[in-house]
Image 1 (cartoon, each protein chain N blue to C red):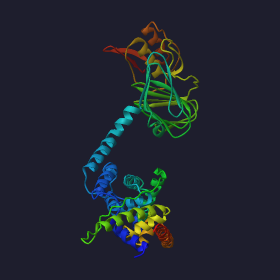
Image 2: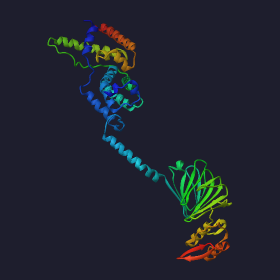
Image 3: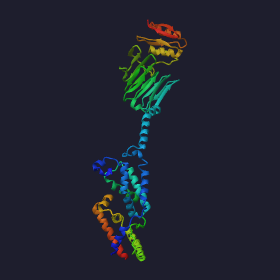
Image 4: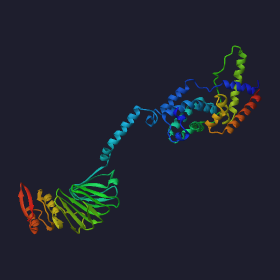
Length: 272
Length: 178
């Protein structure tokens, strides 16, 4: 037998030097590092608890997502003592009048561009998709523009300074305004280059101002309720007396021929 | 053995499942580990790297073509070993589990065989990388040339060439030492 044949004979009797149980040991180690560690990626097995846990976790995430978005993105801006300027995530701006507030979701802003508003605010809107101001009287929709929104329990006043504004289907162009109340609507031209429709509450000086706004100012100033349901167009120019309610009511109502009475502590203004 | 029943085009679209991964492990782990041992003569390192190769196979399962799993895991193992290995002198210590005990074997015969084994294993270490693994996969694990070619991503001709080279070196070195 040659050396090569002898070698070949020996080689046939060789085996790699690993213990009998080494494969099983290796198998356990590898599976622990792979499929057991990542059971959630298993695409072939039938029902497994890991799948149940994954599904439960996914369900919890899906169900809690709206709450998460709400709580994390919920943004409330309130102008208590002075007016407040606020910039939205897209660069649009608002100036909130004293006593006013807005509320929107900053996470969803770029999808919605929608904010709730109470009180009065002036908006400078970046061009883009529709921008919506939600009020208790309905939505005010715009693209890119400057406009003021004022509302109280009785009326909504929108005045457009630039661009185009859609208020309940009525399109306002520059210098247009609209007053929406529970009973009717008034529209017209109103040149106002100030951010706010209403005046400084301590001033009580008005120029061509819708009467709803004047009445709201009186209510704020004197801490009273005034009941006025109008069917006509009333815009007031002049100064009221911030120290005397009766004088102020007289100044406001007489030019229009309106009557004043009282009902259970509420001032009632009646049309002639 | 769902993995191996599927057509090539069908398997290409799917990601390796956990069950298929276990099948692949059971089929190829020993061969991969032995291949690494033939390459390095380091048993512990071979086991570690073979296991790492299968872990890597699992981690990259979304990118791989299931029709070439065998070659892929050998390639991973080879690359991992190259990265880890510092070139040292190869010292094989093959177990001789299949040695048939023969009552006629004399103590002198056993001593001669032991000396021959030592010489043979030293000669095997001199066979260049590539040829040595192919030669030992064929001679010890009994793998066919076609199987080796498939595992290592070689052509049949390349396997034959490596086998010839290994045999030539084995012959020369053994004759020289006689």
